[in-house]
Length: 207
Image (cartoon, rainbow, N blue to C red; front, side, top):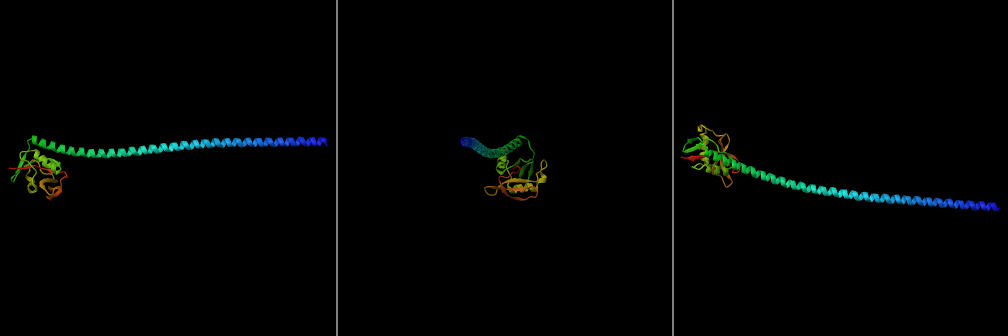
């Protein structure tokens, strides 16, 4: 009987120790899992912060790119405007150079009715430029009136040294503040047109 009690005591003690060890092992596993979860949570938070920082960086770069693009668009428009102004000034300069060259050169003329007519065109230009180019020749040279221009059209075959182009020529006769008369030397049609259009110019003077 004494031996049996001793066996039961030893068995109970051994069972209790095993349970304690199991509990301790389980607690250790739980602690390890909590550590892993905490580490994973920290790493995830770090990844999220890095991702948010990257998104912010991309947005900032996109904003800077859009700002640069808008700036380039404005500069491009300004360049187009400046180029248009330069082209306009270049045409004006070419017209003046042509007028000066004609003035310096001994040119042929022909008489048609009571007009002395140049045998060469001054070029193509706007109406205001045409008026100025003829005036720059001095000595009475000018644009023909619309009636005189029609006389030139009807007698264009008499211009021996330089005929007229089959195109539109300016007259000095205005048709309102923004228009002036012009004539097509291909079909003879006369009509008012905007002064900013480039047409051919032929100078005349009375004698």
